Length: 164
Image 1 (cartoon, one colour):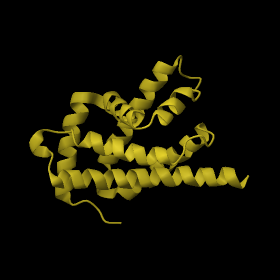
Image 2: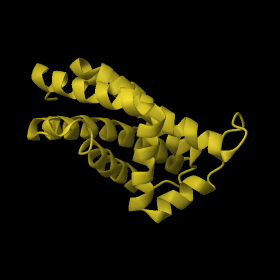
Image 3: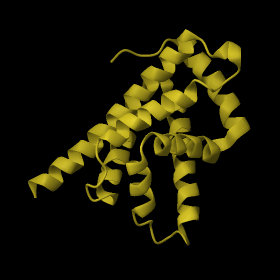
C-alpha cells in the first residue's frame, strides 16, 4: 500500500483542522450525506425509510447523530494518516454494520456515491491557496482507502447473508 508523504499529511491536517474547527463534525457529516442524497434519490429514500435505532427519540435526532458519526470517522482517519492501515478494522466494521442494519437493502453503489460526495466536499475545504493538486490527490487517496475498506466489510457481510 502506498502511503502519504509527510508533506501531504501536514497539508491535509492543516486543511482538516480549519474545517473541523469552523464547521464541526455534525455539519461536515450532514454536508456529505446531503451530497449523497443529491446524487441518488433512491439512496435518500432508503435512508429515510430505514428504521432508526430505538435509543433515538425521533428520526431527526438519529440523522444528526449519524451525520456527527460521519464527521468523527473522518477525524479518526485524519488522526491516523501515518498508518492508515491501522484504520482497516474500524472501517471494515462500518461496512458490516451498514449491511446488517439495512438487511441487504443498501447496494454497493452507495459507497461509490459516498466517495464522490466526499471528494466533492474536499474540493471546497480550506482556503483557496490550500486547494492544490497535492491536496486533491491526498484527499482522493484517503477517501479511496477508506471507502474500499468500508465496501469490503459491506460485501463480506452481504456474502455471508447469501450463504445462509
